[in-house]
Length: 634
Image (tube, rainbow, N blue to C red; front, side, top):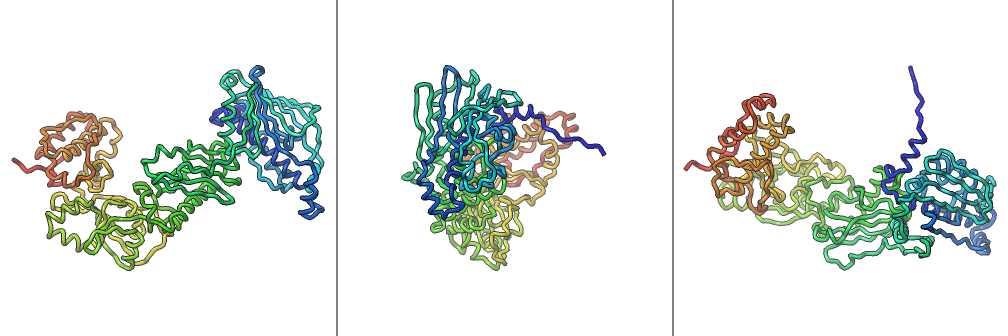
């Protein structure tokens, strides 16, 4: 057996990580430097707090600490446009020669994830842990200069095992170089100063306002004041935590859910589509730094909510960040956050479930979830228009299910317009229809109701009546055992999976969402011929024209069309959803419609093309359509 060693080409790896290919935005170098500075300052603060606690009681240790000069953390950003050098400096823990050798020069190794840091048992959870952030500087800089001195706190905390060198160092790292040059220096102040020699193209774009804006973009707030200077301009950035501001407090129709606990803070907003432009985007912070500004769809929004945005700050290290720190991993922690968001919405609406109804999704996409509390809330919140025991009522799904526990019933799904038409024109058969179906479900929240019926559904089919215009869905549901949300499954069908009529090529339904919906029958002989070659442009366009002609004849049923009109495959949606689709389709086709269709097909595909595509003998017959679609002969 042959083997080969897996190796990493360092030069390729370094150039990839230090490029926009990896980070996306060249400005993230400032975020990385600020995170490093923040960790350095907070680690020094935590080390100084632990002085004396190995031999004194906690209160005594605090008293001893109070007598020392307090550590005041500082971070500054400065830029000189003449030298094109940008400097980020802090008075934190600092680094020494050993740190340069063991951490700075080792890509992917971080002091804050090392055993050495863990042994300190500090009251601080660091932000950085990948050990690659310094490479981001080479997106904008030709060289990086590091000046640093380790602070004495590393040798005076109670749990220090090995004394560390406090000798200052100066290091140089040039773009593309695989070596870092460093020497001992005479720096006196503890902390680290990183100077970037900027590339001219980036330096030309940099401004005072850009620096200030980037600090405020990447940091939710500044627990340590950050001094920003650009030549003669100077300011101190120390914004308050704005995450708990609610700009929509008095806006009617927007639900604002405030979150403030030991783990998370911020707001969730639920709103209708009319408020969409007003509310804007979402953002997510962790440990005070931006991890997502809405550019990445995280899946935090529950499936059953129509429109939601959020501004959230996770105070602890919770989500697994990508190495580039511009997003989060899709893992169990992100799913836990999704569950927490759902819990907050459930808690808000639990006292008034009906209030949620106007913020629910249409149900055209899956809304069932694995979270029991959310499903219980939905069953109380989702209101369905039904005909039950001789009258029209609006009931929550929970009430409907409880009312039929222990029974097997037949449910009909029909539009209100078709229901009224049925009742007025075919009263005798309508009475049979009511007798067979214990529950009639209308359009409102029909699709969500279908999903809730998934555990109970035994069968579902289309019923195409011999009475013109009458088509509806028919479902058999078994409520013998009242089921919890645990066995809910996603194998539901918003429409019957099969027409159940092999002789019909297509039908039009009564529950379309906006545009006229024509369904093709996958069991039909012609569809089986079409399916393998539907990808072919000629076939695709040909059938688009045929279906559009059917649609337009339904819409314009008062006007006779003498031949098939070629719309060029484009769809013309000019349909009033208030109309009853199947009633509108009565006598919508001329008696010779099939002849017109077949003539058109022959003009689209030559005999040779029909043979090559397996469509030889492909032609429509009158029996391929519902009989009451055709106009009687004059």
